[in-house]
Amino acid sequence: MPSSKKSVAIIGGGITGATAAWKLSHYDNLTIHVFDQGRRGVGGRTSSRTSSVINNDAPDNDEGLSVRFDHGCQFFRADTPQCRDILSRWKDCVREWKGEFTRSKSLSEEKEFFGLPSKPPFYVGVDGMQSIAQSVLENVQKHISESSSSSSLRVFTGTRVANLEQCDLSSTRPRWKLHGTSGTAAFHDTPEQIARQNNRNAFLGEENGYDAIILTDVSSSFGQWHRASAGVPEEFAKRVRQRVGARVPLFSAMIAFDTNSNIPFDASSFDHPIVWFAAKSNSKPGMEELQKECWTIVSTPEYAMDKIEETPMQDPKTGEFIPQSNDYLTTVPGPDLYKAFESIVCQKDGILGENALDKLPEVVYMDAQRWGSALPCHRHLKSDSGTRRVISGVPYDAGRFALAPTKNDRQQNNDEGRSLSFLMDESLMLFQAGDMMSCYTPGLEGAVLSGSDAAECLYEMLTAL
Image (cartoon, rainbow, N blue to C red; front, side, top):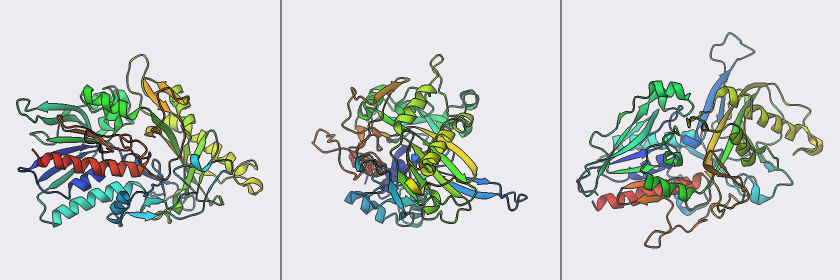
């Protein structure tokens, strides 16, 4: 236990941040603050989206009919003993996903979407992937309030950390003060002009600063032009960018049909230039009672790279951040992914062959999402990879290799020869965690292991202060 109470800031409330907070809550004498800038609350790339559509049978019903989608991470694996042990403690919010799973006959196992269908089991959050981060953090707060723990947890939602300031510079261990904004200016998809008008750049969190910081969004090491930038010291940000190498972008489309589609599978990996994966929300635990048939369609990395090159995230003239606009998402990637999926299930040269559907039902809801940093590229891909492109100064790579099972793909060692699933600077007490940093196969499991390992290492260092 630290000799005096220590404070830790976790920037990012996705699965990595939630896991780190959960791990730290096992220890005493800690103040733990989680800062998350998501519009829909904590969750990050495990976010879910809920909306409603008009009830044609009762058009005067103001509430409409509910639709729900996992628009980021679709499911996850638990191939390592460490992750399975953590899941055993999260039993209330995680279930195995069982259904009718398939893949294109021409698609190799190596290029399946995280091993679906050939390498079960697959796990999901109950009532959506976002429920995992939400439940983990809520249960931590409940445990602390009902126990004799001397630690505390507070979650700041809709809050963007934009700058890290070192204070107590005369001390052998300087502390960190956080500055940023909350509300409209914090959200990733707010137009730049509106974000500037509402940006207060206020002091955040602990008045006396924090002893250590865990960063969980790799975009926090971008320059100040990016909405997720946290003003990380350049010497540390450079190490983060080097560790990442390149990232894999993806788009996802969310489609709700008016009636049953009769598609004979619940999820599938595809051999297609535009669509890599699709999953039916209604087949997942906790979402069986949705009133419309809901599908999430995930693009290929190649398609996403083409679209990001056409419509970049940074203005080449002004350098300003360009957020995804709903008009663009619902007129370009959304329809593209839907039409491609339609051809896959309705044409005889598609996945159903002679059993191809005549047509799909009317679409009553459509939306889409751009994930510029959906996952890290495979660890063995180098800067001269033939599938790599640099767009607006950001390296992307579409190279696809096995995403299952989860294993240690990169022996990234510290000075003691221990394999690390995170990056740290002990002198600065800065940690960067997440699947982008992890030595494990890309995916949620690597993010969980990274968050847990980083929190454990951080606590060991705090006890030595």
